[in-house]
Image (tube, rainbow, N blue to C red):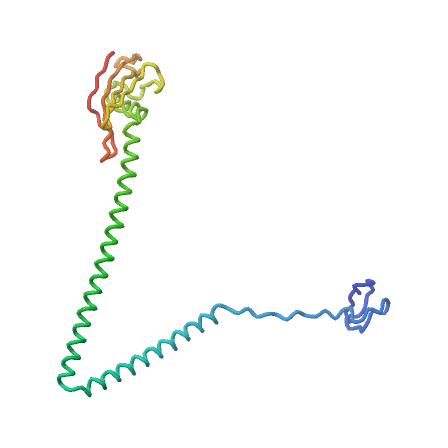
Length: 221
């Protein structure tokens, strides 16, 4: 028979004892077992919803069938003139409904085009703003001038350009994304000697391609 400890006096007692022989605690080992709650799964609710929708659909179909049968019975009891007028009325309703549908679709299409046009205007305005910032960036113009200068050097890899704050570096924005740049470069000539070459470069930023174009250049050794 297994023994357990009394929670009050810590005496070893049979787990089936009615009370502790030392401290007389009644049924000290009868620990109630909490009932296990069953979790309600989502499947149950999903099935209820599906079943409810199925019932609603059946009811709607049944009501529609009864209304259609009642309408067919009413039409069958009409005179020839009444039936002709009835069919004409139904045709006019169908035409009017089709016209409303087309008008609604046209309205949606017009709104879609307006949204697209507005988005295009916003993108164009943002691009114009970015282009304007790039166009006026004299520091970028100086950096880009170096790539054009390197093409004229005997040893492009040896090129050493000054910083943009050097007193001999001058840039001027002319408008229309065009810049004048005056600066110098130290590079090796064909004999391996490093010489200084002053230069002037006129370049323009093409907002369409996002590239810089060389308009003019002069070199002074």
